Length: 234
Ligand SMILES: *Cc1c(COP(=O)(O)O)cnc(C)c1O
Image (cartoon, rainbow, N blue to C red; front, side, top):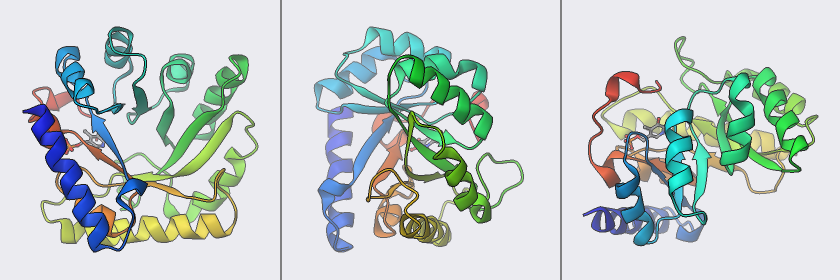
């Protein structure tokens, strides 16, 4: 089941990329495994999925310890600076950086263990008052500040647009994130030439790919519904 789901999603990613004139290899699938048990994640690993996203640190810590060391993990949850040490040790990328204080804590721990940590800046693309993320207009200034932190490598932007069941409603938000990414690339703010854009989830990842996503974060469409929705990160 999981393997079929993964295969189907890879097919859909490839189709959406080709239709948009993009190289399907330029898009990475993060399998969002929050609230999914280690056995089920193991199944996904055995059918070739080697990149996962987790939202909750304690939960992730337990699972990562049990699972294959060749797996890469992206942190996609709410960040607290007092947890920076564990995050730096466990994750290959932190997608949700939106405060300098937290970034500085990540940087300090990364320096201590001689690690270069890849990060994305989370943008509150829909300017929703209750949501995390940097406001679009403050992005350039924020990344300039981050670039003073030697152990962090800012690779691009991430967003969770306002929820809508209709991907066409979400499309303009994806387009705005891409435009913001282009602006930052032109200002030479990213660590690499390529600007990573992490956007698109189960309900809208094809639209996100059409608008330039390089990382899509898909949970439900791979693992089925989760049963702990009350504690979910907004
Ligand atoms: C849960 C979650 C996802 C995956 O959502 P699905 O709709 O299950 O695909 C993606 N990104 C973030 C930040 C999440 O918290």
